[in-house]
Length: 425
Ligand SMILES: Cc1cc2nc3c(=O)[nH]c(=O)nc-3n(C[C@H](O)[C@H](O)[C@H](O)COP(=O)(O)OP(=O)(O)OC[C@H]3O[C@@H](n4cnc5c(N)ncnc54)[C@H](O)[C@@H]3O)c2cc1C
Image 1 (spheres, rainbow, N blue to C red):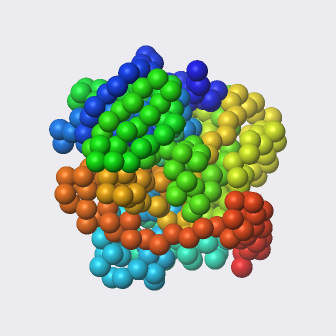
Image 2 (cartoon, helix red, strand yellow):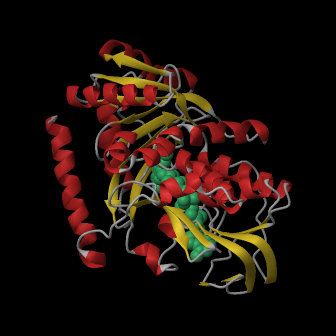
């Protein structure tokens, strides 16, 4: 049995009974492989449209990044629309630009419609360490406004300090259309919603083989699902199940700590409006306070997704650089999780043959885009593939160095970008 990692989220999860393990044969319209947001959003949108859905999860619902992440509802994609506008034909850029804020809207709609208790709070801040980053944030704000987000506010040093009690930043931007959630409770609530619509979910059911055909066969150790369509949603935890996908992406780890309970007053002294925050560095820090008033702080990247030996030693210097007033604070939880990086840092959607679909590679910012992915997948299976294909047409390339050298080469690249961040050039 593979359980959730020991995290603050697992310790504060809403009560949830385990789902059965697949045993024997099942038939359905769509079989979804993976019980993170990509799989759950797909299954929920499909079930809402009346499809018969089976979802197979190797461990527990929300076992992967979706149950461990920073909980930040960050709009847009891991690379912003300017990169897309520079590299894609105008019709494709227009479609992708029109979807920049839809993932966040879907999350808010899910929470509301299915009454999911996941500590949702509105508002996220991008904080700049340098004038160069602030200049880029102003440009991002102008771009997002052009694509329809009129809920952004530029913060100079003084106004930023009113929302983040730290001296390290020169300014920032508040996105009132961002926000934060307890990510595992969102995943668990979405699974319940799928159940309510007649979807079948199986945990502890790792898929071992996908046999293509008019009816695809999806095999686990103890059973088989036959389906007209399959959705591969294993992201950084997929391993080599679908070798075509492994070549153009790389699992990476990022680490999080949650402090002891600080109490409401102390939590509001750090983040008076309870916004979540991420900085603008290539290897970025992200943090927020939790429903029970802890500081939850994440940062750094381990290329190749090895688990670092001492997470507290890795994250605490970052946390104390931001909030030196927390010197001596106790850390109660530490954990690591894997996200999937693509070379372009744009998401990787597509089809293998005509009826096996995949969506993955959100490159560190996936809370919103995974929710969008599920909606687009459901549209595509219902015959309206234009928006899914706007993502599927994004080109993807293998990492330089192949499987052997991609980790050290990418890490060297990251050192270069981090150096530029710290020098402010
Ligand atoms: C520590 C951390 C912090 C992050 N913080 C943020 C943040 O604050 N904001 C943000 O936007 N993004 C964040 N991200 C990224 C975001 O969490 C991910 O992009 C997103 O959750 C990916 O969802 P997913 O469903 O595609 O993958 P996952 O959530 O990883 O789910 C994949 C699931 O597939 C299952 N699976 C794999 N192989 C099989 C198989 N063979 N059979 C059956 N099941 C299988 C796995 O067990 C897993 O449960 C963070 C990521 C991490 C790791």
